[in-house]
Image (tube, rainbow, N blue to C red):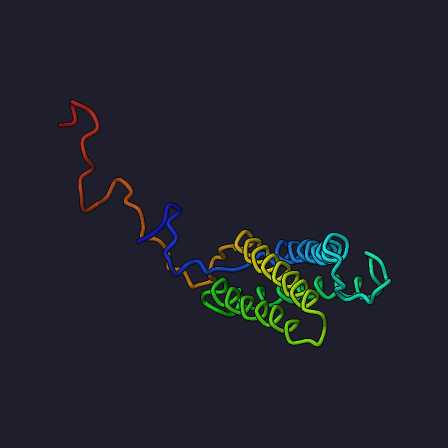
Length: 181
């Protein structure tokens, strides 16, 4: 069975447009960093929870805010690299990526709950990590789907069968005019 263009199913293989994938990965890194900053600003400024900042550091906090944002961006880039690797090496990259990201996000949510800090800081950090993890997973998975391509396989093709040409010495051509009949 062939498709509209005459390609056999084995003539094409899935691929990924690496340029589009990594451009989306950089954009996802920016989004993740901004989510970290917004999450910290909301926790500190609205709910007055001391997340990653000692008391008296203000809403922005100290250098840990910048570090937290940079780590979120780095995680987004690592997720993009993981998706790229899975896209070229596994049969169902989105499924593997989804499972891996859910488990990593779960670790990032549970880990702050084990720290010896105020319960409000534990919960706020866990919620921020959950939002960042889900956003990275969703955006990277979505942009990878839009960066998927189909590549033609390089195979030895057989020559197409010859076409019939007239006059054929073994067969009479069909009559073309009324008086040829």
